[in-house]
Image (tube, rainbow, N blue to C red):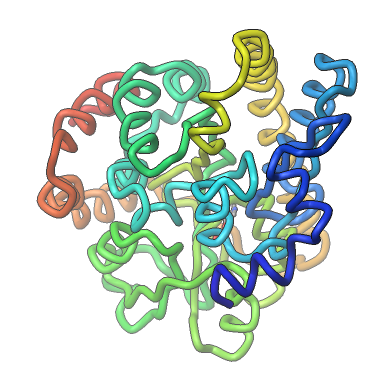
Length: 339
Ligand code: 6CS
């Protein structure tokens, strides 16, 4: 659906009135995310809503839109940049054609295996908030926060232990170009799709495999149409929360300080929430489908995929240019994953 049609179809006259800032009483902030009710992004948005409404004594109300209510992942980024909504999740996996520089988070093996390190970097690194933040601002977006949603696990219909096993496997990835290259380098035939098309794609064999954190594999029911869950250690799912840049710039200093407090509280909240969500989901998947095979690749097996994809950082630098090499080097140092 085009953005215009989508806007007409989904934003009621009353909502547009509020967006224009002419509402008489409580100010409404619209927050769209990319997942279903109860998923990690929804947990974040619900807690954001609770804290903002509490801290503004109800002067601000936050309305949450879940996946599909305002369109796909790419649609909600455009709506935020256009100022039709104030906040949204914009995950690097889907942001590559809009803010190409953020694809550094698509480069495999970037994050640490230690979430305390990831938390420190993703919550406050100047490389992210000052450096990449400028790339967001050039697209009318203010980068508010960044957090991980869990290790990304391959779901496949055959055993994959080495890159050759991916031969002929149609592998669904998110819509950022770097992911296509990464999964080609791993040996598969990648296909970029919004997630709403993944279940039926797996069911009808249009695709054979995909990758996501366990909580999402359960909630989107991808495990029903897969035989293997493979932990290869290549990546964590990361997401950003962005706001419209003009909206943020127009906020009072008090409101900006309130948002900074909310961010700090949510930095702690979301790490626990996503860990619990992933642990509980794996248990439920095994219960619902006892014959699903869970494979954790050994260090040696993981090294073969790492080796196959070692040129991905360099191809991103070639494609995106600018200071991508410096950003990648700085982040690898901060995450402690420099090679
Ligand atoms: O695979 C995807 O496209 C989706 N996965 C997650 C964990 N969140 C939203 C995203 O669009």
